[in-house]
Image (cartoon, rainbow, N blue to C red; front, side, top):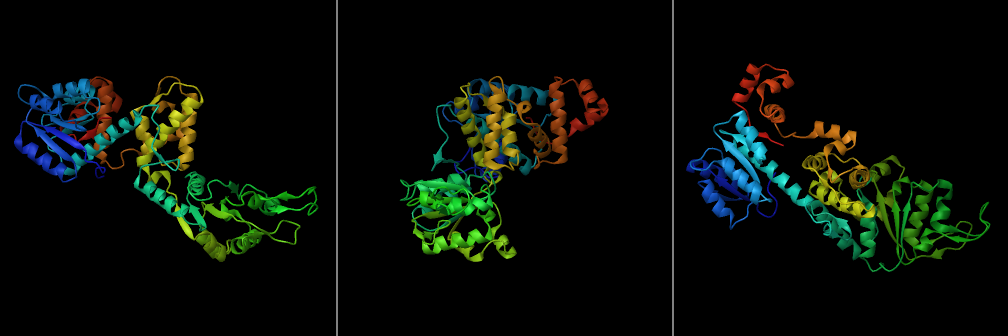
Length: 451
């Protein structure tokens, strides 16, 4: 993964000039802004005037060790992460570095890719923490009432602006829960029709026998129970916009009548012999494959072309992972205020789970999960144990897919060692191996995440 648009700054601290030069060259090639310091004293002086996102420090250096630098950073620089590198790897050193606040612990020699992966993981954790620290009074950035800063959402925002400036019929496609109605509202309220009604209709929620009457209205006596004439949705939306959600659910007979509305700009009320002119812009949405339905003969081809003059695809949440934490914190603030509860915060593990989870229900699922957490969680921290069981199991299955088997094994060993304060006998018992096997596994450990 490449760095984001704004260059992330990294300080490398090592008393070996060759190591400094090698790491600086490799990270600069990845787009980072890289600085170097030959020792801890020089590093601290540099940090007084230049903030950085990440410090990569050697452990053993003359006069002052890298461990002291880690402690200094943790006590004085709350917005900086630290990675430890060393050619003298020991279990005790790894445990102490993690406890002191190092996010990653790399043993020399390491490959370029191992370095890149560790740096990216560490900076991603910093990004998550920064997102989590947005003050409750500060609203998440939004455009047209939609929250998102990812490239795919910026493309959607651009499409909204273009669509709002034209009267053309628009088809919004996307999975359930992606926010198609929000996009439709954004188009309407950014258009010249903004002061007129926006009428949303779920085509799959209205019984078939009532659909025509609901859509176009009916005259008194046109069917049993029609005790008076009543306008339909199209008349209600006159001058404004009608939003036909899940248009793929519409029957073929109604598709013919909708096509007539699009062509002639008029509707026939049920039981009436005279058409009524309507000035309505139609926005349609579907989570189905309409071209596929056209091939099957269940959706009219001519109607498909009519409703998709402009087509806008709404991306699923898994394709806009940069927005997940923004949305999660927005919903956290929203529901905490709504329920009159103090605003809790998500633990790092929960934030990581949010980014790794597949979100089959998209933004709607995220909103529902956060609402549930706000209601059910006691205390000021939402931790992994508070998450629904299906998400916890997903986290166990889905994290670290970019790592080798050796890296995963090493991380588990280090986590176990940290949990027993470095006691190898207890760790071996938990791991169901003998001390000799444990020592062998620790000799040439690959780099591993310390989280």
